[in-house]
Image 1 (spheres, rainbow over the protein chains, first blue to last red):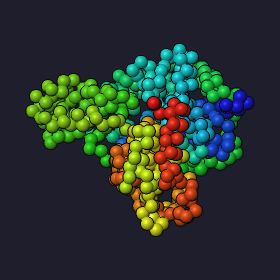
Image 2: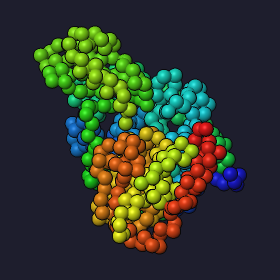
Image 3: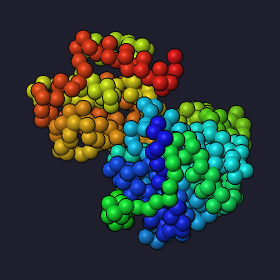
Length: 324
Length: 150
């Protein structure tokens, strides 16, 4: 790689929820047009919900999100609905699309590795295991994609995390399903309080070093500012936010981490909620409409108690289903 | 219909290929073509979580997106191997992206186009006797880059 190449670094500081999304999408347009690789940072000034490009708006709780609740913005990269608040620092690495390797997952990993090193520089012994983790806990939400002629990888540093608020944004089919989602999030998603400015400095050093680029403080150019105006309008357009009709699934499912997910389905009068980790049952709760509720890690016990071999079959199907 | 295995990947030899973007083209008669993703492209994409295609009637240009895919939280374009107008979208594949991975050259097709310049753009595709050699070269290239394991 050309040593004389540069890395534009933009720290936007605290910005509105809308701008915390549209700014880096505008940078993608600039990089697509030949602008320099760019590392950007920002802190959202308020709470909102961000939903992935392909995901259905129906996944969100209509009372918590939308006109009567938190603002919802649809991003152009992947992943599911996420709760955002001022306790998070966003970072985005935006590079030309021809930096991609043929294997997409590998491309994202390469674009996140310097962030992992930056976590370690500020005293958080993070590692990459499908996502950025500390031990078995996810500490950074990430997503990636190609926007025009730019590759984008985004992530966050979580100073504090409101697990209950994060669980509340998802439309859950039953109270026990939301409770289980919250329980698993508390177990497997963790905040890593740190000095944001120290992380910004460390990440700048690590990204510049990893890609052999000379960092310089920059700002949006005129073309990107025009694109920003367009994106500001697009991201509040109900048609854009609404997206497309979601995939129909045989049961409700929500991802907690890349390895942990919670599912819920109904079999006749029984409601079955299960948590899985790497395809193995972590917990099962079976509820009936007349108030019986049994929670266990023992699938055999559930089947014996309710005399329902279909529960076993259902759990096998749920376990086999990869999290989306 | 002939399917051969090249370096571990199935390849339909009567189709034409855009090996840069891993798309195949089946000529259905006249200007009508069917388009899908080849097995090597699917291998390097990872498990498909979502597919989205443009609407029927949309004009697409060769080298430009006709839809998008998502795998491993990465959203990327599906790149048209030919220019034309979308005549049909495989709704089954959109509803169940796993269909594309289980049957990439059959039930997992993506769109059908009325190609606007089939004669002119056909030469940009790999076809006939070249397919097996060029596909094998691509696999070798990916292995040398570490994209594919031995």
